[in-house]
Length: 128
Image (cartoon, rainbow, N blue to C red; front, side, top):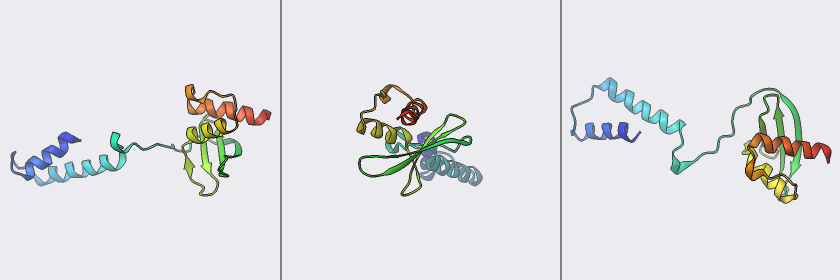
């Protein structure tokens, strides 16, 4: 992106030959598209993902700060967590790790991916 933006700036300051109008608008539109869809390292964004598959299991948990969350397991093995107050998706890994730590559950979430954490936590809650 730095290279494309640099071309536009150089053209603006007459440091390079003029770019035809169509190409200039195309480059600007491309810059806007990339800026709006891809996070840079300065503005890291956590992705919570799309709904992949049908819901096969739901469990409600409550963290120590009295926030309720719904953990959802889908048939694709995707794990999602929703805040029950706002009904928004949250970063599943963070919420589950917080719950595991607060309740001293023996799941070493630091070495597992989100799906494995979710499966182990759901197993634990089913057997509780």
